Image (cartoon, rainbow, N blue to C red; front, side, top):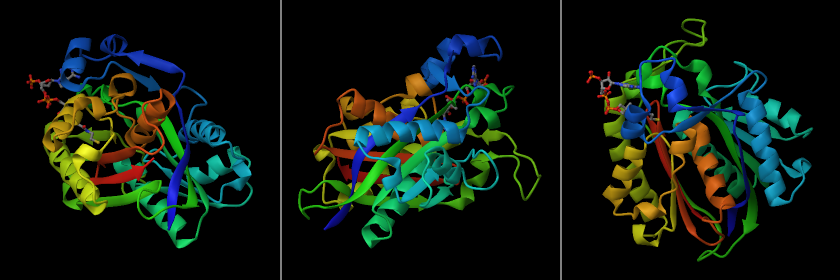
Length: 322
Ligand SMILES: CC(C)(COP(=O)(O)OP(=O)(O)OC[C@H]1O[C@@H](n2cnc3c(N)ncnc32)[C@H](O)[C@@H]1OP(=O)(O)O)[C@@H](O)C(=O)NCCC(=O)NCCS
């Protein structure tokens, strides 16, 4: 059967790395509070000239190099972001131009922190239907530009960055073949007011700032993530003890721990980068995946589960034989 196989990963971070102590000079917070409540120690913040599209293009160049393929062979680019360079056109088309690809399909997907999982399902469906053969799937964000830097309850939690994977259509064995095995997505729009941006093109005509009721988001996150991972593993005919790695959305170390515990997964199987990157929204899963591929943890043939949850609410998971 035709499956979408990951043939390369890449990521990019802004040059400026900001510690909790540095943040504590601007807002009423402390390294101790941030580490204890979230596990976050550092985040990268985009500077002048660094945008969602430039970070995305850098991540793509690294993913293409890892795959050993030319940019021109890409026929689909899907970029998950809530912080595009412009209201339109899609930042995916900017990335396309930066990579020197003259003709391919390119568009953005908006599902906030679950955006990468949404993009993976869209691309996987297009690959399996024959609409695409080789795709770049990207999560890229510059959340620093929609943060209220006077609100200590949110500004300490987020960072900027980008991650990308190259997915290729390959004929693989039904049983035991590599590729994306299952994807499962959800949305429940009743929870808009728990995590949102208080501006928009069609309402205020402004970009707006991020607002969040953190405690309530936390409660929903653990429940939704554990259940969507269980669903996607059941669809793949796998149990949680067959999972080699979970690459979760990096929102909060306590959410990662609580979700792993609920599924009976050993903490050593969970890839954690939230300490170094903070919450980079749609970028967090592909960024963490690239880290774990490059340091040799995630290897070909292993069972890898990706999961994320974000504003909307939206949430989802994907099971991959890597
Ligand atoms: C945001 C989060 C870290 C807050 O942790 P919490 O344990 O729920 O803390 P609370 O919001 O109840 O706040 C506890 C206290 O810390 C204070 N506080 C909040 N932010 C602070 C900060 N940055 N520094 C110091 N104190 C802070 C609060 O004012 C509150 O003080 P009070 O008790 O005097 O009122 C946590 O709720 C969380 O991670 N939620 C999920 C968020 C998330 O993952 N969102 C993205 C999903 S995509």
